Length: 628
Image 1: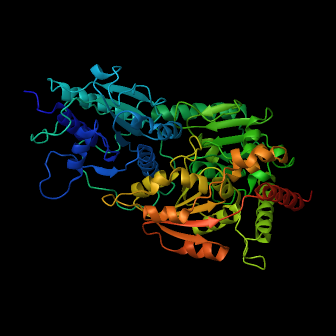
Image 2: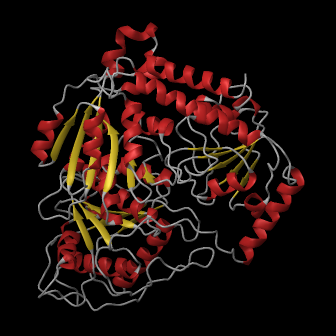
Image 3: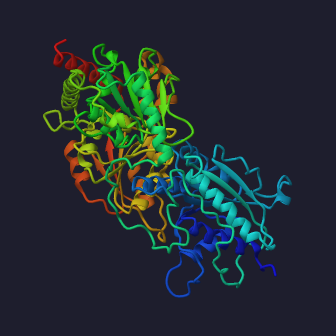
């Protein structure tokens, strides 16, 4: 006998199956067509008496804006990955424009390899293309995704639940990259017919009929064993400590040995003395630091690489790559992660006289924007961890001397500015000064989410850590979209306070990310906003040249005049205005409890000149340190 509400029954089966497949966190944006899932999620998230014993456990987050919901889900996935668990996160929307609002987060997840399940409600097939309200072509709307599934409206037919479970097993496997090694977003478009409200029927009995356990390549099983009991939101945990690479399985070991043999035969005869640098882009991981240290090579590490620490890290490296005896003398580059920040690094990787070894363990694609990679490997060859290929060469020492001198020169230029604590105090802090203090206040056990544009580049210029904190950013497409919502997701996923450092346009672009309803679990976020009333990064690019000054301010500078304090007041968020270095240090030292904004007023009028001064001082200091 068919249930009175097939839509409601199918929604309940869907949530049961997701729990069995290891998906516990769901972000919901409100809507009518998605109400079967909303009612089921409300039941599943309920605690205490009256809870149906067959209801699955769900960690539910509700946001009124689908764009924010998408980035919150992305942040939850990113935070889980940083904590050592690559688990998919689901986001539920209603039909129509609600679906399209997920697209920015989907694009970031696609390029970052983050597992999202996009559960979008739709009109049944008979209403599509008829002019029905809120009906559009949702199938294909969220490309590129790893998989798109269009699920017909349930009718209660025999075998329907089994088919749905099987389909969801495929969706979760695709999101996790179980078969491909290429995790990312998956779109499950689900049609529902009225009635959309639940009936009085209890939750269906739990069943694994139709569920397929898809074992990931390499032999690792599901992130959560099928049928495991839900234990609620994750307890606070510290970031996973770097560990030695696990011993590969037999097929993987053969691949590594083959790669090692090829590398040794072609150009890695230890010690080979080839002037090599290690470039650690976004998400490179600790192997980049290990490779650099093992082979006495300089390490050029972006702040979100997970490798910016240790004796081989070169400060202000991007200011040295044009120096003939440093960047100009590089013969080989080992690339891990995805380099995204620096034009000098991209120019180095594009040089035809530089050999390039790219190590990309995940994804169907590899980072090679210059189309110049010599070899691409999916594993780190053991030789690179033990080869000592740069032994006895003065190469590393030259970079270390130059890097230290350049970093001191940058600090000296910044100390001369109006933002210092000396006689010139009272002026506004510069972006690099703000970044210096944010970096100094972020310890090895802390989590920092950094926005695109100048903040991440300023951090890249000045950050110096004995042991790097967890630094995360949306570098898949390097947009300013959704940074606050992403950071909130990271904080909720990791169960710990998170500091956010971003610019004013990035802040305003995602101001809705501050809105957390009174019924929702609130993240602990300290948001540092470098407010220069516009887009200062364009001043450092070719658009900021004097020749384009007439139209620059309106179409690139884009001043807004927004009052951030009043915006924060409207969102019920604490606001602190900082005017000098001492005030910023004090604000950064305060405990992070709830959501608070630290606004630092800065001035972008001299940004282009400051960048030129920093570059000149760093290069001059490096030359003097090398006796040039």
